[in-house]
Amino acid sequence: MMKKHITAIAIATFTMLFTSVGCSKQEQQASNELRIPALIDSLENKDIQLQLRKGQHQFYANVNSETMGINADYLGPTIRLYNGSSANISFTNQIGETTTVHGHGLHVPGNIDGGPQLAIKPQATWRINIPVRQQAGMSWYHPHFMGKTAEHVHAGLAGIYLIEDENSISLNLPKHYGVNDIPLVIQDRTFINGKMKPYAVTHDQMMDGLREETLVVNGTVTPFTNVPQGWVRLRLLNGSNARFYRFYFENNETFYKIATEGGFLNNPVALQELTMSPGERNEIMLDLSNMDNIHLMAEFLPSDPDDQLFFMSWLNPTASVVELRVDGALTAQGELPKTLNDIKAFTQDDKDSANLRRFTLDMDDDGNNAVMDHHSMFSINGQSMKMNVINERVSKGQFERWSITAEMMPHPFHVHGVSFQILSHQGKPPAEADRGWKDTVVVGPEPTEVMMRFNHQAGEQAPYMYHCHILEHEDGGMMGQFTVK
Ligand code: C2O
Ligand code: CU
Ligand code: CU
Image (cartoon, rainbow, N blue to C red; front, side, top):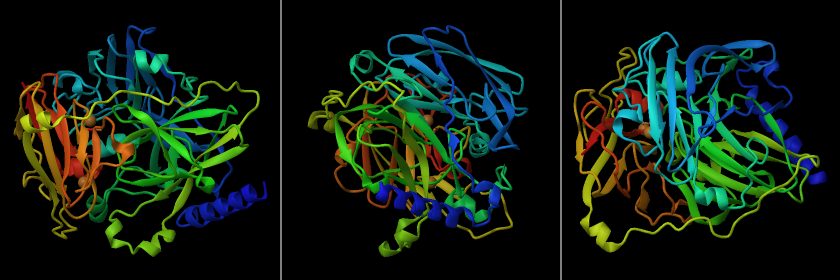
């Protein structure tokens, strides 16, 4: 008890120290109840109508911020999809400018992937039928219009897809959405007198990616949520433009990672910390049967950890992501399964037959603060993203082995339309907790190798993308297009 108290004070002090930089008193306020995005089940709703619109969202009581959302003022509903079935979704664009809606993590053909080519004009409606052909996992949707992705996501356009399958339905996991199965969309924003600062970047922020000071979780600042006295499943999405976080619980409480972006790990992996880059998802479980409350914490990692001497890391800001408060009135349900999945690693034959491609992400700081056209400063294999250039052509069903390196700082590399396995991660074997299906991976100077097979078609009119998921880098041109035929 005493220990908890001291930790709480330490957290409060840290938070104050931290938020007091450039923030007003208004922002150092008590906890808010965590917002849970509305849930739409695609089996119950055969005509899911989503409206992208402008909103007025109150991050702080009685202060309106100019935001955007989907059927909401900020963020959008969670949509539950079922493997083997399909979902009818229409996206109506009421934000007053062109955008697109990409299904990040979905294994769908290029024409419903929602990449930069699939523009939705103002007032127009984009209708798609998503054939769900992938295992249970957490994906998400967000705009992907060339040069506008960072701004649109920052304003609040993003939401979650929860994919279920026979396995996820039969496992005795915590399943009560928003109660013991909790989505956490984690973002960072700047507030001035309680008002969210609209998207704008300087030259340096373009280079580092926009990293802001205040954590926002499902559109809530300093949230708490009531949970039952038992196992809780947290579905983490790093939905920030550029910030990397190290997550951990108070007192370094042990938790279990059960899933990566594309599905369950074979077995839970016990961890005390977890680092996540933008675009990555991880599902974790924690047992609260002997606790009253606990904070999930985040350490804000610097843009280039190599610039930081290791003993200086205590200077990194930390903040509470969410406080879990046990409420005895809620019924505990579910437990930690021993076996979750049966992922098979690629065989040597698979690897030998794979088509090898190499990618190098690069950025070139011309130091020119005056010129705000940053296009061409960011590239992959020496080329900046061009809407009319197809950079790679992939054969459907063929094993692909991609070796990726990156300069200047760690970059989260993301591939559309597929889940991959990591063969090697920055020159080392992947950690046990990363031996799952993924679609986003942090790359650096030492090569990272991923392997996959594309099962859907993506033609010249609607190709897939690979890119850095630091949204400023993506918008700046650190992206390429590829077809699958
Ligand atoms: Cu989450 Cu191509 O994006
Ligand atoms: Cu994507
Ligand atoms: Cu990058």
